[in-house]
Length: 379
Image 1 (tube, rainbow, N blue to C red):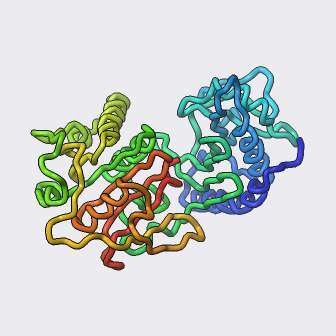
Image 2: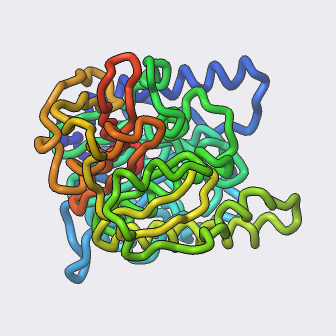
Image 3: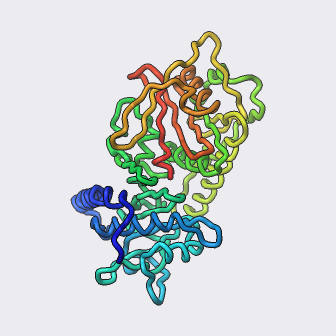
């Protein structure tokens, strides 16, 4: 196999090796079994290198979208195996990409002697399985399988060109860290993906996914104070409150009806997330009842204009910065910062058209609005 030529692959490989080794040790100490094989630095480097160069290629005009998983065919349930395995080469990956570009399908990579080969595809992965997803040209997301029943993943690092972002595992322990951010990080949260805070994560992913940009205001249930910070009347007010999402969360069934329930939950999440694409903001209670959308945010009467915002990103080496709110982005970001400044028991989720995602929450420690940049966790 040719020598890797993507410098970031070598720069991050040993750090990732240490990360996966530590998580394997901790899982073994807890008595867990059935974990995915542990990748070494050389394997990680080669997979990252091949995926990066494949991400820059196109097949019949389409960008390469693939997900690579490091595991043997025997570690997968009902794998689709090629009669002849494929070399782990950018051109080969691009050729096969159209067959595996849908979510939840992974190309299996395993050793054949001293060489890494693509043996086929799988939709099931064991816990702690190393996964590399090509999200866009030059944009790679390294993650691992959480091992839960809903097949969710935990982001470990994001590589974009020569920029390496390692998710900070300790970010959730910082003062005033919103529960939503802790759930996105997932390192310490034992919560099921379907608990209420995690449904907000799903809403964030769906908001980011529709690509139009949008805002969601999450307000206390039973309170009307939030109306003091939006122009009245709300163009698309909902009466009575739309409660499908909250009802689904209260009525989670046991097996065997869980699959149908999950599908209904996903449809409800996408439905509400789609409303955020309308000009203005959608408004939802913390109990997940939709109150309206298209709301225009206005400064609360007699309250000062927000002058400064604390901005952080949950990555290693990241530093907090105090900026004027207009430096965060466009009107959505400025109005969301003002809303949280005026309604300090609420949070605001803002998706940008360029893929950035920000969670605004009031920081009691800093006595100011805290803008958490979290797109690294949502890729």
